[in-house]
Length: 353
Image (cartoon, rainbow, N blue to C red):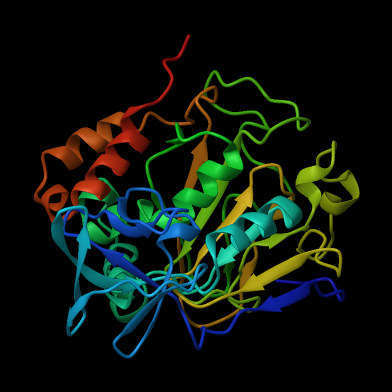
């Protein structure tokens, strides 16, 4: 397939050499600290739940406070009120949640680099049939949520949820469609999204959703979960940073009819973010973007979800998939926090008028 001679700006995020930690209780709540220095169990994952662990020392990433604790391997016991609570160490973000939020507001995108554990990534690869499972075929009979607990755990990842809720200015968000996997075979371009576009609710939909004005508070944000490494060569999403703040959709010239089967605009005003598997790529639905072309010999895998405010109708009803999940064994592999989050995201949707 032909390609324009111009090349996009490429931002490459290598796997981090240092990541913070989360401390998770059995029910999925996280160890946090109040502005008064008191330890709490939190269901929200802002800066207050971010810890830096070096050897046996656990230090809060923002305040520097080192709370007393008892440690045994990756299990830590803290006194919260009059109770002793055990927490397991979990992989945390490379940056503070507030830093991701600032970047999303400024650029229209942010990337939580390598935030998912290897176990979750492996589970996602099993569902997507990529990586070690590339020779297998995806199961189209069951909702993806019911095929492996990794799907629900990824959807409920707490740092990205905090960023999305803060960005959308409401805790009451829902998914616009059941989670799906976009797997791009070698030497192919994605069937959907080839042209430059913005997403629902800023473009026409098959649902009764009206098209929203680009002016005003954000109404939806996409989150691409990188199941495999994403690169320019294997068709990573191309976007224009800052375009979420523009009042107009992509110009017609960026989607002008091209000869010799060439691609739409791919010059330096466009950006491609390369990042490892297990990264979460968030971008405002208003952001101009398009799919890329996989020039490699391996499948490129991604799980697509979009998070919407209460006044946006889902493109597809998410409740049937959630009902099947609630009746599956996979549901019981989640923590109580993950169960609650996934159920709310799929069941608390606005009724069609």
